[in-house]
Image 1 (tube, rainbow, N blue to C red):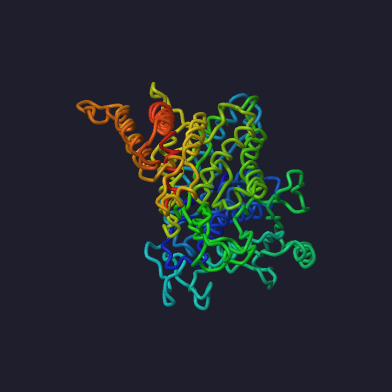
Image 2 (image 1 turned 120 degrees about the vertical axis):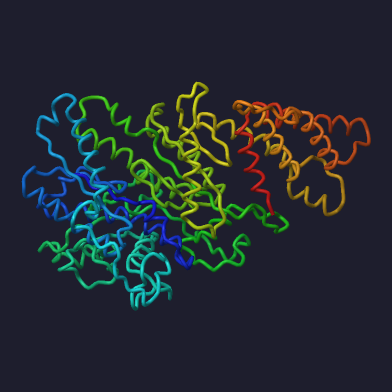
Length: 606
């Protein structure tokens, strides 16, 4: 039996919000809610079948897999739970989302005979595709009415305009639907660094306790509480079966040798979120923003400013922007198909759990342990895909670190890799459009091809460029070459203010933009052409333009040479820049040089 949450992207990112309050917590909570709803749907099926938790083989990334007896009672149980899930999603979300349930029969021989296990998986996949198209009984006689009554007397939910606000329910003085309020509460709990426990009670026997979520989920109530309360207050509920599950949601800490087991079953519903490590009010980068107390979750506005630099003259430079990173493991289905040995649920589950553990255990630990990456916000990371938001430059650096960590995690197996898309946006940009921009970039990376047309993938797309991870060292090299020519920004600023000549040719923003235009000329020159397309003759002049612009820039920065020694110094500077930016950069590095240029341009913008 397999369950699959349909409409995850729309659930996490959809719905126009009339307010940006709690935006970060809402996003984190919605992502976690996907895992929670899938967990509760699997629990509903296990309880209906009277099966123990060990009958659940997998539960990750909005999917679960259960092995159960093939009998009439089991088939009837699937039908009852399917109806319960459909009714809940129609009632609470107007059927915008759902969990499809599918089942297929298998014999013992299917799990041991050569080639038959793959056939079982194929049948189950086909049944699931059918179930997705029949969700809510839309293809049968039991379909819900196409127009449903809904009470918008209190207006639309301010956090999701598709849903009505509930009477008397407000979050931060904003009218809310219970699902939005629960997502925000869940997001707030997951941002708390203390040990958090998630307890699941039968709805007809749940306690009246602080921390209980508002909605009844498929016949269950959910309580968020601390570890001490979970241990001390609910023993009687466990003894008589009212407490159905008790999960540890705490994250791995920065200690690499820490044991994650705490006596509770762990669930990867939580994920790393950035919190204020110092008082942002004392930092000029965050002037004018609403204060955030130390230890509280940083807002997207704070994250967008975190990569700006404060110069010695107290000027703040650098673009105010978020970086969005979205990706997934390339051709994971083919990896499962190529598993060594005889296919089985054990091997299938082992590989799935190993992949999932990288994103749900290692990545949160890495973000907690590395001070340079702590401002990365996890929207979701598990199964075979991930989505992160953070300061624009930190997120790009994190992409490099993530790829290197994953390469080591898979023992440098060249057949296992991921592709990623990166996008930048202002903090007020709608989250669903952020996701769409990252999706577009990811499709670019997935579409990378070899000269013979074969798909390559194993790449990242950013700044309208696609580069294979194996070639990323070129980007690092180009960034180093640019940095070596940047000079001392503070001294350059002082020279300009005082009208004095300097002793170096720090790169101006105008010169960097000029390099970008020349890189575009070379890009057009090298691009494959269709029938009837012609070369633009002016593009072939990029070298002469480079020499002219570089000499002009150096002479403007240093002043005209007054003697032979000054002339020799200027000539040496010009040749070094022509070599680094022309021969090695525009000429040989192509997209790697463009990426490095964009990095420097955005970092210097006032």
